[in-house]
Each structure stands twice: as structure tokens, then as C-alpha cells.
Image (cartoon, rainbow, N blue to C red):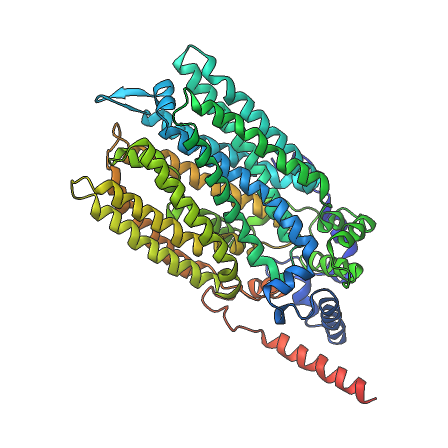
Length: 567
């Protein structure tokens, strides 16, 4: 993979970094920023330049309300809403494949009779559940390289068209007289579509992480789970309205074409990421792109200098930037944190929640009742995700993840205990506990995981790190989707509702790992986060931490400015 094409950005980075970076020793734990801290007056000028650029581009953002910052950066906010269509597509796709398994017409056409009831064989249900995230694993593997070679816009548009091709493979599957052929066509379509969505969503997240101002970063990333949930609601409603139709699942397949079109339109309308142009020696185009993104009262040139400084500050004396560099030196820790953050959705049980339409039928509900439960849960989760925009902007990310995942573990425990009894209310209790898990996680761990992922990766390796993160996300979904089905399905271990005990343990483990490895980055700039990783600040020591050398430099710059005013 590393030999597909030469990485072109690092050559330019090395040329533009100046003699200070070129002559610096090649060490894993020292960066140009750290080196510049020891260079006396050079340090003061660099800090002063940073402060000037930040004053011009993002001054006073922390003193404004969320709505005031939205109005200031309204162009970026509109782009964020547009790119959230990738999450809409992701959620809709997942809702369709999850909820059609609860349709009797689908069960009859692709399932089998087992103990006088139609079920979907564990082998095929696992494959279909894992097919989309499995394809997404491959998509995210290629996504980082393609983004750096061809740009964010081209990759976004092409991946959306590829998603439509995946739908074209699934749609005619019902025409085959062979049961095996129908099953295989559905599986192949899900793999192709998953591949496209993996590229699509990781590209959108990379783009946003490069253009968003610090004050909107957390709230904007909260839109991803919101639109994912919205896509799931629409998908569940489509399935519900098609329940009584003969082969109504075919209608659900075809509806995915419309959602594949939205990201293509967005990719055509938005500017390319300025960071991509800077890495590829196209500063004039970077200025043009930044001018389309910046508010009218902000100097686009200053914003470009700030982005360029962030890129240059992370340049080592190496001739390339490859995936392997994400796992070397200080980047190794950052990459593993991104991978963990992207895996949290599987840890708290999103895969299980997505199979509720079929799963609730196994614990006693009718197909119609199970889909209604799914719709109610999705609507409440959607409202919770909207509330999370405000919550994530004000509450520490790490604390939010730990508290909400801890509460989710108690809900899973309650579901497991309820299913230890045999009565007709078990199905209703199971549905209620699953809705409670969905709402709790939508308020905290789900949106916060996107924020942690976007804040952790370094700017120079961001596209590749985000691709690795989505690879981990897809791998976790693949493993969960493949294994969980065997745990609860009648022709497998047949735990049914007692699977709640499994997710109780998973959430408890998630709280522990998060406490040990995830740092608190709320309110930190890109430069601060880079310095703290370089200084190997422990995950539980980030709150309130400030480097002594930085404090001394800031005091020195302040004294110089005061002296200048007196003169």
C-alpha cells in the first residue's frame, strides 16, 4: 500500500520549513516547535506571530456564545451541514440493512424455516451485518492516500457515485430464482456500498477537522451522530411503510439512490481544503479556498499562514509521510487514541441497537411492534443528539464519555436481568432498556467520540490517522456484527435478551480504558495539543496543565510588548 504513489506533501513541507527544520536532528520526540523554544529571541518572535495570527483569525471566540460563533462562521457552518449528508447516508444505509431483516417478506425470500418460524440463518445474517463495515474497512484503508493525492472534494464525489453502484448490485437481487444467488448479491452490494461509505465519511471528517475553528469543533462534530440518527429514522420509516407490501424491502433498496446523490452535490459546491493545497505547494489556491471559508471580517491570508505554520511545525526531516509514520514516535499514542475513540460505538452497543427490529421479535414482539420501538428509540436519540451539541461544547469530553457509558452499562445490566424471567412483558422491558441505552449514549459518548478523534490526530498525518480511525471503527463493527448475531440468534448460542450481560461488561471495560488512555483536550489549540503530546503528558494530567517554558515565554513576550508601549 505504501508504494502506491510517492507522498508529495512532505517534500514541499521540508522545503518550506526553512533551515531551522532542515538542520534539526531527526528524533522522534523533538519537533520544530520544541526546538524553537530554545532559540531565544527567535522564540519570542514566533510566539508573537502566533498570537497575531490567532488574534486576526479567531480572536474572542471563547467569549462568544455558540450561536454568535455560528453566525460569525456561517459559511463554514453551511458547509458542515452539507457534509453531514455523508453521515445521513451512513445512517440510512445502516438502518435499511438492519431493519429489513425484521420484514417478513425479506425473511421469506432470504431466510429459512426454523422451529415453525421464519428466521435468518446466523451465518448469512452475520455476513450481511458485517458486510458493510467490512467494506468500510477497505474503504478507509485507501481513503487517506486518495485524499492526499486527489483532494478531499474529488474523493468525496467519487465515493458517493460508487455508493450508488452498490445499490445497483443489491436492487435486482430479488429477480433471481436461486436462494443462494439472492443472498450473495445482497452481500456483494453491501460490501461495495460499505467500501464507498467508508471513504465518504472519513473524507468528510478529515475536511471538517481542517477547516473548523476551535470554538465550533466539538459542536460541529456532534452533527455526525445527529445526521446518522436522522438517516436511521428515515430508513426505519421507509421500512415501516413497506411492511405490508409484497417484497417491500426492494422499495427500501431503491430509496438509497436518493441519499447517494446528496454528497455529490455538496462536493461540487464546496471549496477544496486549504490544508490540502498548502501541502501541495499551491498557496494561491489555498488563499482562494480560505477566502471562501473565512468570515468577511477575518483576514484570509492570516488564516492561511496559521494553517501553514501548523503544518510546518510538525515536519520532521523525513522525505515522506506514510501510514507507518502514524505508528512511530509520538504519533503512535495519538493514533491508538483515535482508534479507541472510533471503536467506542461498538463498545457501548450501537451494533446491537441497530439490529433491534429483528432482535425484538426474538424476545416476543411482533414485526410491527418491533419497528415502532425502533422508530421511537431513533426519534428520542435524535433529540438527545441535538441536545449534545450544547453539552459537548461545555462538558469535558473524557468525563462525558465515562459517565454516559457507565449509565449505559447499568441499562444493559437491567435488560439482562429482565430476560432471566419468562413472561409476556419481557419484550417490552427489553425494548425500553434498549431505548434508554440509545438516548444516554446519544447525549454523551457517541458525539464525544467524534470530537476526541478529530482533536487527537496531528495535522500533517490527519488524513491518514482519520482513515486508520475509521478502519478501526469498521473493524469493530465487523467483529461485533459477526459475533453478536451468533450470541443471540436461535440457531446460535440463543442467549436472546441475556446478551445484555455481555454489553454490561463491554461498557464497564470501556469506562476503564477511557480513564486510562484518553486525555482531556477541551479548549486546547492545535499547537497546545501537539506540545502536550510531545512532552508525553499523561492522560490523567491534561486538565490544567501548562508547560513552564511556555509560561516563561508568554511572560517575556508580555514584558516586551509593555516595554514597546512605554517607548
